[in-house]
Image 1 (cartoon, one colour):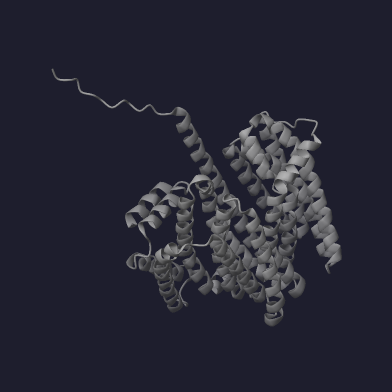
Image 2 (cartoon, rainbow, N blue to C red):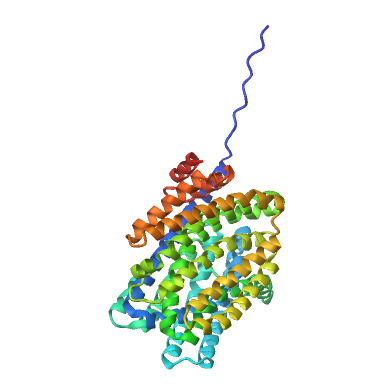
Length: 509
């Protein structure tokens, strides 16, 4: 008698897992879109502002932005990370954390604002700078009221609503600031509008919190405040060093060489860090959860991911460095007309951006392996190197080019230190060495083409140069299969065109 045919049991989909995947994908897409829109709008606004106010006033704006940027690390002092972690795990305690941050962050914002005013009085600033800095410092207090709401929504995975608020706030800020400048209010108007837009942002976030039933729970205990400080200060101090490193050169240039030279430096800074924020930072955020999971149990796979991602970053950042450095004159004239000294600074500073993209990968790898103390020491070393190089190079060049070279040198020191601590094994060096040489050869070919087309249109020269670089990468077989696979996976995370772009890259492999 023939046995009845057997069939494989049907696999029942796990609705909970599918719901989680769907929610995570939706959240990541919302954050990516809002980040690109907000950063892109901010970049456009800065280029417009620079044209309207001129190099000297833009240099003053850059100086005040640097002061406020460094001080902005104090109000949160990384307590946002504690809120994200704890509220995500225990949503019922959201009100306790909200009341704690409501006590801590505005108070720390007030301390930061007073500190800025004291610093402005100590340093050799004129009355205009001191008045503007005093007005701008008020935003540190106002912004903390919105930031605590932002972190709460992020913790409860309301990222779509959070993203909408982010974009709405940025649109309102830029529109009102533009009207203020066009109306003759100058930088005073810009900072007053910034404070008003900050209040608007805070109101939107607190409305959203009430909508989701999150309200402060009183009283706040001393134990809660102590816990928040104790948990956040090590990371907060590291972040303070990071933002200090980012902005310190602007303060040095403004103090030593004046606001006009700092205006040229600020324009180059805007281009370089705009590129980093719109490209490398977004991708790194998307890969951070995977890196964290691998760090807990699969260190070998983490090392392979970091090596491949670092190589891919070099391959993608190299044409940016080559193209922008060789076309710096045309690019700066397009974005910042009249800023005569920007091109000479940009052609150096873009390479600092290239090294920064690579360094961010190894920095993240160290953090997920619980080596924050190493990252802290590296950032201290970066600031010390930067100050020492500025002391040598600024008097020699008598221009902000010295600060750009100092920033590049300090970035190389930090990346080198990270590589020493990371200790790439000999097999990885052998595996990537030959392919890295092929990438560099492709970069040389791109350089030659752009030099030949130096009298052509900016976009024509750039597009042809990138096409030559891409063709050389394919002809020389610079990428291994795992590099194509990683590039395709990263491309799929791009909102809208991601799947199509991923399929295209897979075909190229």
